[in-house]
Length: 171
Image (cartoon, rainbow, N blue to C red):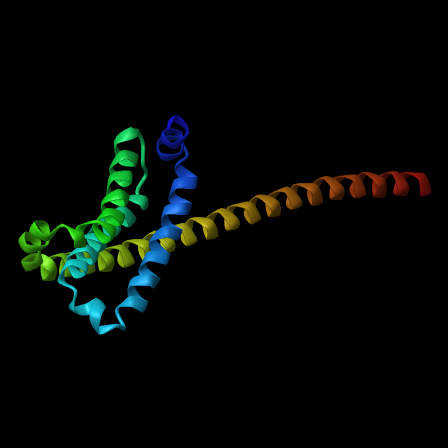
């Protein structure tokens, strides 16, 4: 149990890697399941998937921000748990399905809005990183050009000194 806690709360990079893969596989599974009429007509499953969509959307949103301290990681873990729990367990809790089933459209619209926000945010972050990378490359190239110019100036001084020596020797 201690090792499990260590994995959940200490290994941030591994957690994000595995949780993102889990989310991808669950999304693919839901997409394939959505082809079936039985899947679409199961109100419990639709409630679970709707809650899961919001949970995973928030999870993705949080994974794009700088996470310092314990609470963001704990919140991310809680959202991941809620996303998985809502697909696996919620469909089999009838009183919960009855209470929440009227809100599935709300959950769907809310998770879609989060996904759209994330798309814009990720694009903006990508462009910013691309610009910074390009600026760093330009700065490195400028530094190389300055170094090369300095080397050329030093070599020109040596050439001038040798030319003067050669001229004095020939006279």
